[in-house]
Image (tube, rainbow over all chains, first blue to last red; front, side, top):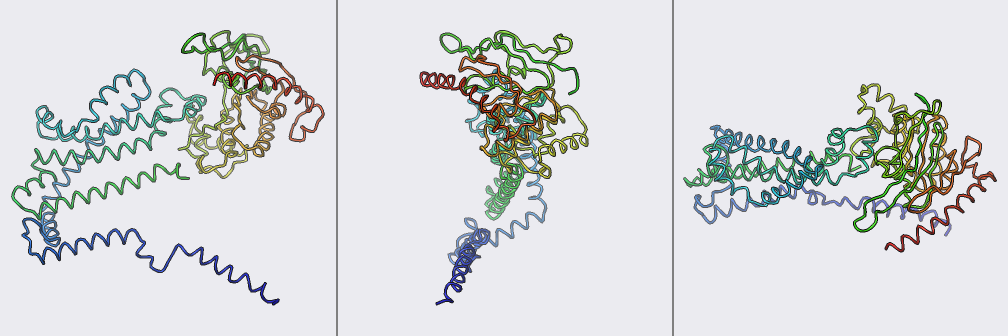
Length: 278
Length: 270
């Protein structure tokens, strides 16, 4: 009897240890989101390959994953796809960075001046909901189909979300911070640069995410309409001559581009938000 | 402090906002008071009486709609320019994207001071508020009391001739508040700076101030000017002094009626 009280703590601590480690069960690899994600992709590809082989479907309609990979490697080896990718990336990002710079400057201006806001509100309300692809014919008439056209269409896609989110971010800035900066001797310019801009950055970056997505869509769409070079053009030309493997290969490159851009944005988001997570 | 000693005088200062309909709302009415150099002056009053607004007027962020503000050299009695001022805010107003030392450096950076010198000064100011070793923390990572100590360091590092304290401990819990009141009292006594303290707390006003202005409910007027003669340095122990009790009762007596009036006014508005 006397031994019992001494022995009692042992099972209690055992139980608590089990409770602490309960988050890590033995079958942990099934809970790893990366294994689950890539594993399911691999399963779909294997199923696709097997079904294509077993049903003997015409490769013009549905090439097998292995055939697509061969086409993809071939296209990269002869260098054409790399050139296309380069053109598309250049068009997307050159236009996007123009939109980022102009959009942020315009956004701060709109947010800090009631007059400018009154004017800009009308134009933004008219232009923002307009699907930007509808501007392609007009832009071709004005700018032709060369570099200026591509940069314009890319910048047009990104600039509205960036402007709107910059305005939102600046207007949500805590007025107490502006007062504190003034109290410490900040001029109007200092306040814009050192208070309004940094406090709007999380919101601006939300606009960047939206805007870059639209830029990618627009550049690829424009390339499909007018381009001789670029991923969109390659996709369209391959489709016309029924090179289905090449169509899939270009789609894979575009999907990979999407993954890279999204993951990069996630990383930038974490870095920018380091003071908010604490 | 550097420069000639300058007093701040409110000469019949009033402030009225244009209302959407009818007569303009009068926030402050015919204020006559003076803030002496090297002294701590407290402004105490019911909420909504416009005491923070007074501070904004003193700082120059708001222009009075009546009367005027004068800055007077005490020695010569001549008018002079606005002395350098820094504010400590109730809501701290730290820049959340800057870490502790960058927050304290902010004003020095605007003044164009070299990186090495402003870092050294910021460190010194942080040491004065017992915040050594927190340079790289962001405001979110600090407790309320620590954040306000950063706020105090950020104001003091500017070496202002006048320190404006806008309910500096209003957002803190009662215990943190006690400790910080004592710390601030010691800092202000040591620096000899002029300070204007806006507060709800009678205890805070008595502990820190040389002179207390008690305000009426809106429209804010000066109801009484009370000198605090309690010996310095003051601390929580000062509250056991019988003279403290007498002062407290006198101020509470003045405020009680005004707070009741303010509450009735609020009820009428809603």
